[in-house]
View 1 (tube, rainbow, N blue to C red):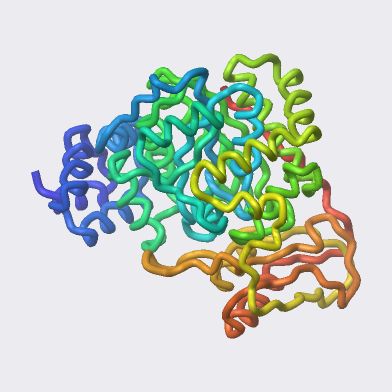
View 2: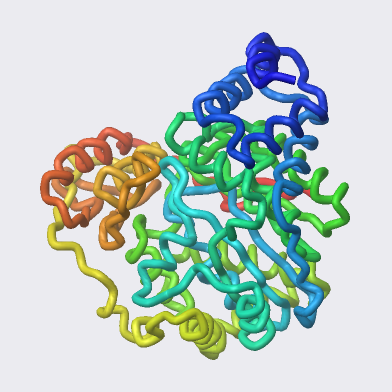
Length: 433
């Protein structure tokens, strides 16, 4: 069997066998297939797609490419949440401590930024001292004692995904349904969780731009998860607007802390409550409505914030910044962005907002780029808001002044202003079970 023949076969739109998919994953993990051939196959998959059977085979090959975690020493029902990626999506930072406070266990492994979307691990690493790499024994100890632990993907867990994830990020092959499914579910199934809630984004800032594509992605992941014996639920949520007001690592962590203090933006707070209540209900903690009330109480009485602080402390972070956010890194330069006309913000290209944040230094253009944790955007006006010419719609932050102008142009280009107020879309557009 030759990699050349596998690439050519997929290039020509033919269906790969289980053996060919396993050959690719096994040999690539061993370093016997070079990145340039792996990139060629990823691009062929991007253009030609995969059948349901191929996608499932690729997912299980990724799952089985390394160690399978054993969480049997974790006491209680284990529940996880995964987002398909969005702009301003820092929900894990709020949802995980809420769910842990209310009795379910969150043993979570998260990723770094991919393309224009931010990564939970990058955000957590903006907390001074926070460790995202722990020994398995310490990880399990933290989950049992705190209720939640969030770490980066270990080298041993689904190593095929770790290599492919980095390659996709720099070869413009992020937006492929079979590659997204195999990446997300390969990791999730290598972990030992009982229940998984998927937050599948749809709209201009998401991988899936249409509701139809989002349903297809959600259905594929739910079906594969059920085949593996997991309790599954997918919520399709709106990403035609950034979540909350903050985009960028430190800025998003601060907004998450504000939300756990009961002072977060309404849209972001609402999606966090929806996700947390569905996670708890799937874990057998009551009806969705009952769990919603419990989540609201955990925010109101401060216990969810305390759980977040305990998690930070347990992972070596400075929990002082949780109570006084002035301890986060501050950008050296900032710039207000003003709108050029009056009317209503009728639509934003959320991906463009993500790109603007990336241009400021909040993300990576190459695998080796170093993130500026202080970089990002604070939005003062969002979709549906009325604006007058000259109003400040956003403030940009960066440690490199030369980055401001291009990011400003990208954000303005991505903001559409009309005479009529747009029809508001619900945050949750569908549920797949």
